[in-house]
Length: 172
Image (cartoon, rainbow, N blue to C red; front, side):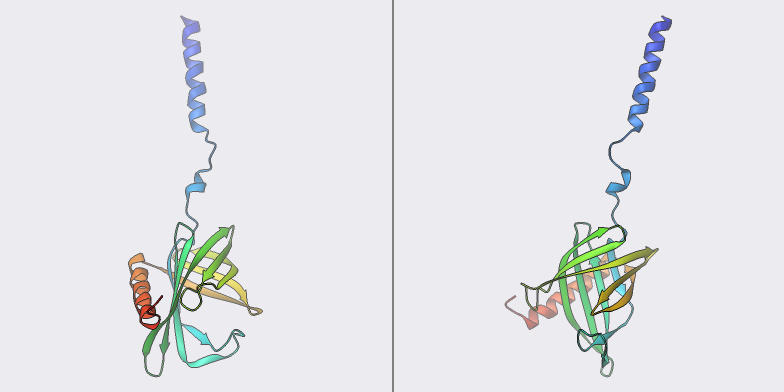
């Protein structure tokens, strides 16, 4: 009888320890910190790609929606500070990926030229509800700070941007 109990206890201990072992890292299912909806502070609007000269009466706010499926939506709202008129300047879509603290996004400029794609890479850091992305553009390293917002706000902004673009480009 003692042998039987030893075998039962040994088997119980073996199977108990096996149930704690997993082949998969629990963190693999965790979404990258960048997933979510974000809005920038007010940004200058540059006249060209050199990022040297700004449009004197324009400012922009950028919205980003990094989705779990690896897609993203970006919307910029440009405001004329003299007239206080806001214009949904553009919305773009694309794909993103993360490797460590590096985010890569490939943007499809769907409204201007649907065949045009750009790929940008930058470092990112999330501190609570703040996302900081630092990247080099036109030889200049810049950082943008974004604050987490609710998804329904992003959906509202994106819907308005799509409506604006459909007025400009009725056949697209």
